[in-house]
Amino acid sequence: AQSVTQLGSHVSVSEGALVLLRCNYSSSVPPYLFWYVQYPNQGLQLLLKYTSAATLVKGINGFEAEFKKSETSFHLTKPSAHMSDAAEYFCAVSPSTSGTYKYIFGTGTRLKVLA
Amino acid sequence: KAGVTQTPRYLIKTRGQQVTLSCSPISGHRSVSWYQQTPGQGLQFLFEYFSETQRNKGNFPGRFSGRQFSNSRSEMNVSTLELGDSALYLCASTAAATGGEEQFFGPGTRLTVL
Image (cartoon, rainbow over all chains, first blue to last red; front, side, top):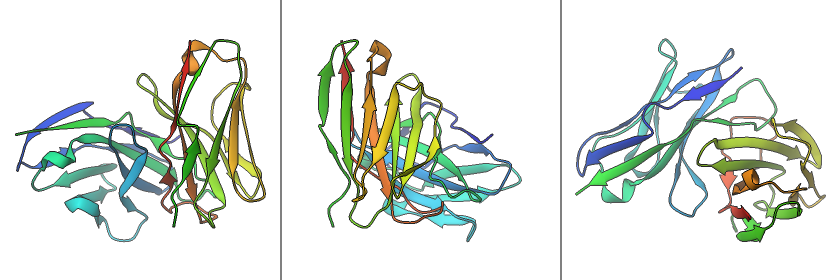
């Protein structure tokens, strides 16, 4: 069965500091991996996705993530945090061999950016 | 292109009632998925429809049901509401028939059960 683990339900960083949000997955087949962001009272917006092309994936708003098969990780990073990055971030996995859109989401990490 | 729309945005119901939520996907998208989001359980997959057929179902009781119409619009229904059904219900759509493509999420319907 697939699963996703996000370490740290809350992360605080100073404005301008590195953002690192951790995601580890468990999947018996090569998965598709996604990072989504959710702002208050809104739906989810895709930041980036991994679909077995390049292992380093660049997304919107300066975020990127690296797929590491040996570590079963897909951590999200941003070199310099901005106040507008404060939101909740979700990692999700979907099997690559299935014709369905059943995403398994992590429990989310709420990012706080300190001035 | 208009995004995914969900109606209503907010609902208040009492225990034992039933509720129907509606989702209109992005034009041309044929896959619609539903998720329940709660502080305790996070985001949980309810079901997915593609071309009016349910392709996958999450681990929810039979009180939760859905359907999709020929224009790809989807509804989900919850019967005999329980307090624990209070949640944000998110709908997502995608154009592709197979996995790996982005799901576009609506703003959600916040259901409160009293």
